[in-house]
Amino acid sequence: MEVISVILFSFALASVGESANILYVVPFTSKSHYIMLKPIGVELAKRGHNVTVIVGHRDPKPPPNYHQIIVDHKEIWEILGGKRPNVFTMVDISAEKFHETILWGGGLGMTETALNTSDVQKFLAEDNHFDLVISEQFFQEALYVLAHKYDSPLVLITTFGNCVRHNIITRNPLQLATVVSEFLNLKEPTSFWSRMRNLYFTVYEYVWWKYWYLEKQEQLVKKYIHNLPQPVPSLYELQGNASLILLNGHFSFDTPTAYLPNVVEVGGVHLSKSDGKLPPDLQKLLDDAVHGVVYVNFGSNVRSSELPTEKKNAFLNVFRRLRQTVIWKWEDDTLQNIPKNLVLRDWLPQKEILSHPNVKVFISHGGLIGTQEAIFYGVPIIGVPIYSDQYNNLLQVEQHGFGRILEYKNIDEMSLQILLDDILNNESYSIKAKEVSKRFKDRPLSAMDTAIFWIEYVIRNKGANFMKNPARDLSWMAYSMLDVYLLILFVVLLSIYAVFKVIKLLTKATLPDSKVHKKKRS
Ligand SMILES: *[C@@H]1O[C@H](CO)[C@@H](O)[C@H](O)[C@H]1NC(C)=O
Ligand SMILES: *[C@@H]1O[C@H](CO)[C@@H](O)[C@H](O)[C@H]1NC(C)=O
Ligand SMILES: *[C@@H]1O[C@H](CO)[C@@H](O)[C@H](O)[C@H]1NC(C)=O
Ligand SMILES: *[C@@H]1O[C@H](CO)[C@@H](O)[C@H](O)[C@H]1NC(C)=O
Image 1 (cartoon, protein in one colour):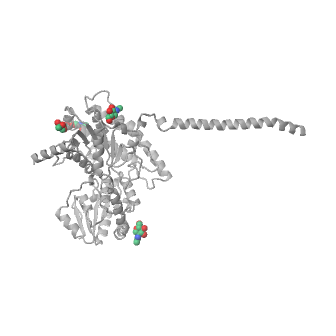
Image 2 (tube, rainbow, N blue to C red):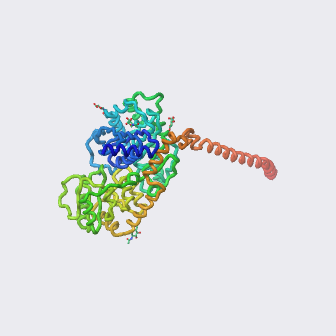
């Protein structure tokens, strides 16, 4: 087996011609992120590159040229110093609070845990050479300094679509009237007050991120990453100088947006190559479900079993009346009085289930990865958004006509029954879902081939500096054209002033006369 892999590896090397040493930095331990990020690293290895990955999950059967450095695993709740909360209680959390505690607080803790891992420290002390550093772009900025350490270009990848902060830093045009900050929920994004809120939040996030949070990431660099070549650029500069950012989105579903050439959409990258198969028992269950299947899964972070009793019962009572088979990700065995048509499992192969033609609807929390899977296989969605970007994803789903939002606070028997009746009986949802699916896949290159092409492009072109926006070197005044506008305003005002002055002079010239006449008459 080993021998065959090595031979295959050599063939792969020969076919590419040039293999690069790539450092792939994806230490964030959330499962959903890993689902999207792992295939990119593995694909690079399969194409003959020597990939070293700093990662939160171990791949049991990696290609021979895929070297894993596993970071210590800590749940974000541990890091934040508390117990795991019932994630459903996060429904009402504001975007500000979500950033402060979860993203910034959690991000700093996760980054420190990754850097403090003894295998990571051992790796950093080695004398390695890399042609490229690829990093996830998710609140672990300290690790961007590795691009400087190895004197190599930096590629970033988001798991959540566009990043407004990155737009600001790289001077990609801001489009705040239509592009909503990624973790902000707005019901009508283009209304006046929503645009105001979007501007306010974008400024709030940028300022706190840059002047408070990023400083703390800099301290982590000083504490854990030693012997860097001097002078060390700031993390802000490093991010602005990134050669490429790959976004987990696509205009066929997400808001169409203007992007610089080094900002590339690769949404659906984990779906390009689906080789998974359903386990036989599930395959049979789905095949036999002549009336179709309702698939329920609130994602890896949310536990359905934590639903309050009345909401749990609402689901059970509605499911009991359905002709369809219901498959639900359920994490414990406390559920009583289970309807005959309901199958519970604590883990489910989601992609493979959604790919089955008998699945009629996906009841979901609206996480981006799951939403993309439903799009890819053309399955309508009933979405219960809990936190993060979930509301925005589901709003897109609703606007594209292949699903409906069910707000958590509105979950009861009646609302659930009405929604399910609508989606199961009105064909328009599944027709729309199939339409969006078709255009999501209609691309010149598959998402994975696009990602690999641009990564190799950066390697071939030694960082492809020419793709970066020259506006990065301008002052904010020059970039925003404010200096020019101010001069124009000044000239216009001056002209108006001059015209008034002339009119006044002219009228003055005739005025003394009239005054004289008036005086004479009186
Ligand atoms: C591949 O990368 C590892 C570092 O993880 C390094 O030890 C090894 O020498 C590299 N192999 C080649 C052929 O460059
Ligand atoms: C770093 O790791 C060491 C053990 O390897 C541990 O004693 C220490 O508490 C850790 N520090 C942090 C901040 O996690
Ligand atoms: C089906 O849904 C679409 C979109 O929501 C709606 O326009 C249409 O009237 C519905 N058809 C029926 C028969 O309810
Ligand atoms: C920006 O990155 C390029 C490689 O992509 C590198 O040559 C250059 O030195 C970097 N500039 C700064 C200011 O870090």
